[in-house]
Length: 115
Image 1 (cartoon, rainbow, N blue to C red):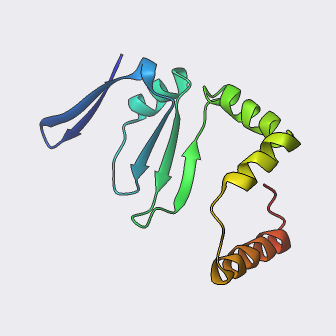
Image 2: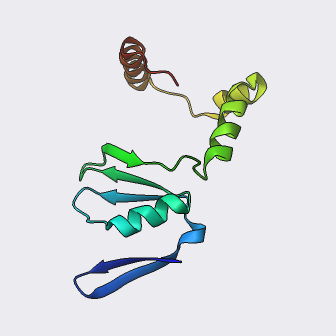
């Protein structure tokens, strides 16, 4: 099955749905109910973002295709040796960048955001 992107009467793009893991659209884009149902049946997530890139929401099938990826990410997170290796390979931050990261951490910790 193909997912078609059209504007007026012109087809701009056609993509095989079997290869899609997720679709991201701007809030100004219209999507048919038939397309939404086809995405759900194919196990494909749809995210809607604002013109500034803020996530407004998403449509997620009961069994999304990226579950295996997410599971592997969570398992990797518990690997202390890997985490240390990643931290050691990151470029050093200057003092200003470190303050920004610390401020973000404090803000997310207060809001109860984990991860």
